[in-house]
Length: 293
Ligand code: FAD
Ligand code: EPU
Image 1 (tube, rainbow, N blue to C red):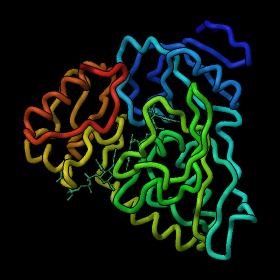
Image 2 (tube, protein in one colour; image 1 turned 180 degrees about the vertical axis):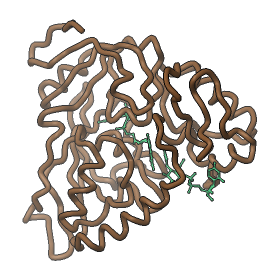
Image 3 (cartoon, rainbow, N blue to C red; image 1 turned 180 degrees about the horizontal axis):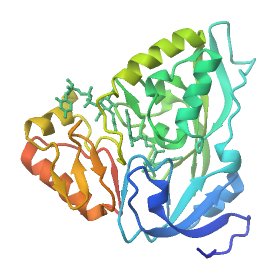
Image 4 (cartoon, rainbow, N blue to C red; image 1 turned 120 degrees about the vertical axis):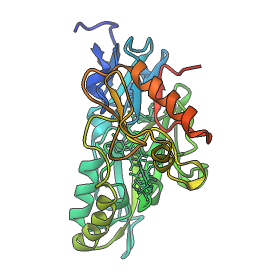
């Protein structure tokens, strides 16, 4: 792995296989820009780019992608959870800045220990904060927008700070455009106790018991009209269907798993097959890099 394009702000740039950054474990090489602060992020997005968070919602082609792939590290993966005295009350707190590159699972555990409630419904989502906000990740027990005060968005045109009221967010969508980078957020949380937060987390965790433990990018399709896409796929007899080394999970039909050595083409073929068999229009939840026509 050799450094490629030189950077004037000191960004670490390396050509790397993207498979290692994804939960599916699939994806070829790209030039990865590790942006550790705002100046580095601004430089990283001067040329065509994609932002990679926890890689938990991505199917990346075996040939990789031609654009720069930007990862948030350093200051953009730091967190200040101290209550802001000017904005916090006896019942509610507003934190300092939490970087878009912060791993969500660790953050959720820390908030539980601090007895801060609001985001515990997202327990078990293996995202980074930026990626989880970008798609308003969640479960029926809660979603990212339940605990946001401010979102900072960086684009090649500049930086802006917005509140949830400024965005058209909803089920698995934030209203933040593709390519706009969620660089950091401030959280708005309710003061509770570690025990009460843990109890709520336990319910959300239990809903995951039927999900597969293998390499996967989570649910393939959004639930159409509130009906479980997994249930529809199950009823269409798709569980355990295989193409190459990719398989529709026997535990939950909306999960495609990598049995070892799966290619992006194997996953694409299973997605096509599922859509054809189910017959009801289903919107893809995860993202294909590059996009397919
Ligand atoms: P990535 O997969 O890296 O990227 C996904 C998209 O987000 C891309 O468009 C990327 O460009 C964009 N993005 C990433 N970071 C940023 C950023 N900082 N700024 C702007 N855009 C960014 N999802 C749920 O909603 N609920 C669940 O219960 C759930 N369970 C899951 C369980 C498993 C085992 C797995 C593997 C996935 C699950 N997912 C779930 C899917 C996934 O975790 C979410 O979609 C999550 O929001 C993806 O975040 P990420 O950081 O991994 O983003
Ligand atoms: N079901 C089946 N067969 C299946 C899958 C599900 O019959 O193969 C049935 C279940 O028995 C249950 C119903 O469908 O009666 C709902 O299933 P589940 O509780 O698993 O919920 P889901 O709607 O399939 C959603 C999210 C998950 C989230 C879980 C738990 C979507 C697309 N999926 O799944 O999110 O973890 O609820 O809250 O919204 C993701 O988005 O990547 C994801 C994993």
